[in-house]
Amino acid sequence: MTFRLQHQRYRLPFRGTVRTAHGPWSEREGFLVRVEAEGGGVGFGEAAPVPGFGRETVALDFAVLAALGDTLDDVTLAQVPSECGAVRQALAAALADARGEKPALRHAALGVAALLPAGRAVLAEIGPKAEIGYRVFKWKVGVGEVAEELPLLDDVCAALPAGARLRLDANGAWDRRQAERWLERCAGRPVEFVEQPVAADARGAVDVLLGLAADYPVPLALDESLVGEGDVAAWLDRGWPGVFVLKPALMGETRAVLASLARAKAAVVFSSALETLVGARTALQAAFSWSGEPRALGFGVWPLFADPRFNGPAAAPFIRREDVERINPAQLWNALL
Ligand code: MG
Image 1 (cartoon, rainbow, N blue to C red):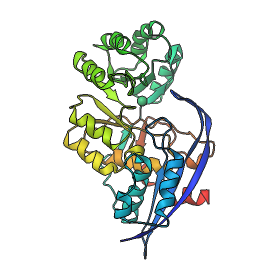
Image 2 (image 1 turned 180 degrees about the vertical axis):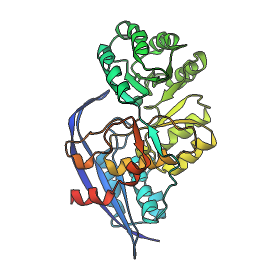
Image 3 (image 1 turned 90 degrees about the horizontal axis):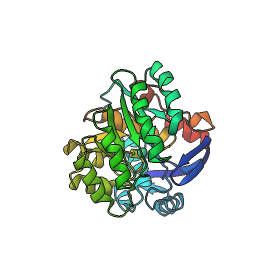
Image 4 (image 1 turned 30 degrees about the vertical axis):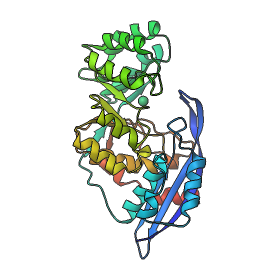
């Protein structure tokens, strides 16, 4: 069956500048897509490539969408280049949506990881966040020198409420030696995992990551190393023993990626790609339908946009199934018209 395809490009300012490893980021750019079956079903998706994650850009996605024209079917979807994971994911999600293929949401609620700032500022933030109910905390590290940050680890662990778990995200900032110092110190502490200790594009990164994962008891997680479907497949082939931090928004045929992760009984953490509510709906549906062990979501990002209509459920210790079911992508589509 052929579907009618429409897209709208958006440019939405963030409420505040987002700091990334690639510099400051002040507005989100991407596309909403809408597909409609002859005689009925309508579906929506969002293509929002993340600058610095692979080669996909808004300009490239625009060219892909322009080339598709005003129709879409499975054959033309399969022709979208695999490096365009965000737009492939958006189109696949919209098609499934238009066909009425609703994923079964198996969890009533999922925890959300509280985001903690880098450096000493972390210490003042844990208490208030614990008080409102957070039990998983994500601390940004690798921003300052190891000699400044590492001594804070014990104070951070001491500030955590009973039973809480700490995630450390280095965003690829360390070299092997620096990572080793941290991983040694993490042993025996309530650290759930250390995310992307070395950069995905560092020399020999694959061997360094596999080596660190084998040498230290604390689990490691891949984030920037997973730019698209091909990366997930490659790390599964390598027998990655750690966590996969998955941004469904970038994963092309997300359902196939999730099926391969489930077959491998992989540990998966679902994460935002700072998309609007339309893309977040797809990503959260994936998280809520995941059959493996549920872990706290990397979705503590909202309110994110200056225009509140595009924000997802405000950061809270939990996202409930109803929060996901309530999202109405048509409303956002109409807001952009
Ligand atoms: Mg990360």
